[in-house]
Amino acid sequence: MADPVRITFLGGLGEIGRNCACVETAGRIVVLDCGVMFPDPDMPGIDLVLPDLSYLRDNAERVEAVVLTHGHEDHTGGLAYLLRELSAPIYGSTLTLGLARHRVEEAGLEDRAQLVEVADGERRQIGPFDVEFIPVTHSVPHGFATAFHTPQGVVLHSGDFKIDLTPVDGRLTDLARIGALADQPGIRLLLSDSTNAEEPGFTASETTVGAALERVFHASSGRRVVVTCFASHIHRVQQVVDAALDSGRKVATLGRSMAKNVTLARRLGVLAIPDDALVDVEEVDRLAPGEVCVISTGSQGEPLSALALMAAGESKWLHLRPGDVVVISAHPVPGNEWAVGQVIDGLFRRGAEVVHTGVEPVHVSGHARQGELQVMLSVARPEFFVPVHGEYRHLVNHVQLARRMGMADHRILLCEDGDSLVLDDEGLHRGDSVPAGLLYVDGTVGDVGHGVLRDRRVLSEEGVVVVVATVDVRRSEVVGEPEIVTRGWVHAPEAEELLEEASETVRKELEVALAEGATELDLLRRHARRALGRFVGERTRRRPMIVPVVVVV
Image 1 (tube, rainbow, N blue to C red):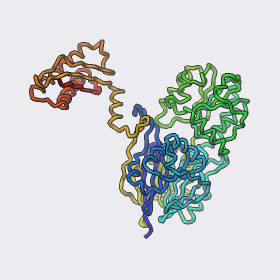
Image 2: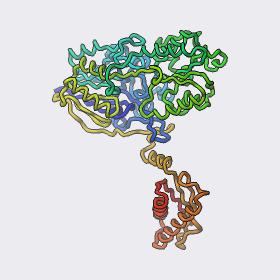
Image 3: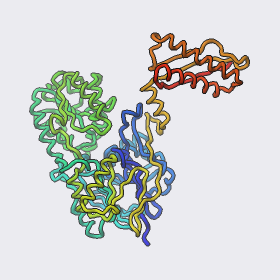
Image 4: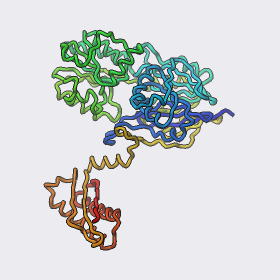
């Protein structure tokens, strides 16, 4: 009997982001990606959302390595947090590791991990795993599908992919190798990207964006052009540079991550920009408007990003002028639509012309649509199939797609975060669940917790009412009148009678409690909170946060 293989999903199944999975056999674990997720609008103050890493923390001594499929933050952004829990070598392409290294070094954790570069088509023995790195096309260069050659056969993870027949760098998704694996030894389990499983047809080639950008640049003759995209989208940056040079412009970068990634990509030969075409953003104002192209971060409307600061008129480096053209070469990540909309409004207020995908096809997805997903299923011919990477509706649509391709229901499993699967001689079946909740990061503080987040929601929606009361427990009396302080509940100068009535309500409640022998501080606080909360609810039909402060003398 061959050793079973266990696959555990810690994130990425039921949301866009937080991608993290574990592949286990012979008592060892390989972690496949460790990403972050953008916070939702109902997560006030939260900067990042991570996978729950408690399963890996509890099994740190069994972790053999981390394998990165590609360099996007939703697959690598959690590395610095993972490395605080364990130390392990990290495998990935040269560019992927270069992008990930920035985060690891910023956290001061470079001594916790050995970065191991792998090339297209390479196979590496990683503990008990024989891992093969298969090229796939995505919106960041040098992405991989990973084939785990295990005692239970080949487990193929597609990574984020599309089937682009005319990629910018000529590097195609290696369907031939996937087909060869399907023939011999056969693919036992396929885990495949589901992001665009609702979308019919095929995703347009990245090179189509280049043609759109050229039209925008030539139509903007004599005007400054600012283009924003993901800093990791090196192919998009290349096409922006090509369009800028073709229209006689110099190129400047704006935003720390954009500057770092452009420098890295040029050093690795992934991005071609002549030295004399690059200028510092500080020199832009000295150039004629028609000679300027600025490539900026902030395509997702992130607060304090370069584009958001420009939209607010607060950028230190670039002040937009009426007539400037701003190209948003990205779609909003789900949950970011409102923030992006606000930034676009701000750009229009500055007098800029804004070009986005509703105006010109200046962005295409890096993820496969239904046609490409069907090609992957057809070429891989897996014995078992599990959709990954997507919101729940994407996973369900991918399941339905596999059924239409002729896969039997018992060979398809729909999973969510926290689920585990066991692949053994009998087939594929569900294993024990593991913790897989959301881990919130606020500034440098990890695990803010649901309680803190709930309090922030209440404060943002209903406000806060604080009552300060002084009691003399020896005399069993309330000293003076309780003071009511409120923010976001009612406007105090216009509600004096209401506040006085609230104070009187709390005073009477505390007097009754003291008369009944209540002397403990916590008990007196509960009485004050209950009385004030009941009063507020009855009189205003609102539910602000109630904060009782009882001082004992």
